[in-house]
Length: 295
Image (cartoon, rainbow, N blue to C red):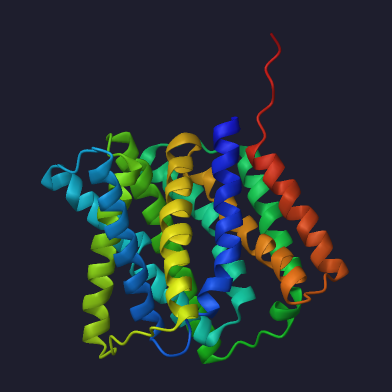
């Protein structure tokens, strides 16, 4: 990858690998779905103001708005709610394993919807990464039991991953049709927050707010870093190297989260987790490394 793409990749995985810290402070007084509404509404508002101040165009056709709304529904709205629902029935580690499958989904959806060529090294790299993620969370997989609730959690988790993959493909499509990533994110997050707010009202969620310092600061962190900066980096990466390669960053995110956890929460790496880490990083290199062409 170029230096610019490498920077976007690193920024994405480091920020998303650290967002669990912010999410911890979001849980409690305010319903998680409502907190996600606040997060993306704030992100949309800040992005729109930024675009306005920088003189970026905010005039788009109705067709462009429909695809930006689709991006919001798929990537900044329902899929987030489904993750929260899945984690009611599954551990966060198992959800991370499920989300690692987005690489294969993006390969398949990219080939089907955008005609993106399927690279063998990408498939092998993704397979190595998923195996590595499985080894890292081996204990949680071994204790998994096939109860109705667990299977329901898997269903919600896969639905979330599938929607996110469609969102990735929609973003790639928008870039091909010259819709800038910043404006697409701004309007998409706004549409996504609105859709999720309607769903929350329909489900009878209470729109409360916590004026405590931990809640407000974590909300700002998630909105600015976790949403604006990370999603802009990630979706710019999609437009540059493709949804399949960019999505490998999502597989590395839980690894970064565990590395951070080992410093702040005393997480201890087992032998299987270390082997898993090596597989994830090896698969990452295989999927993203470009051979130099002899001159």
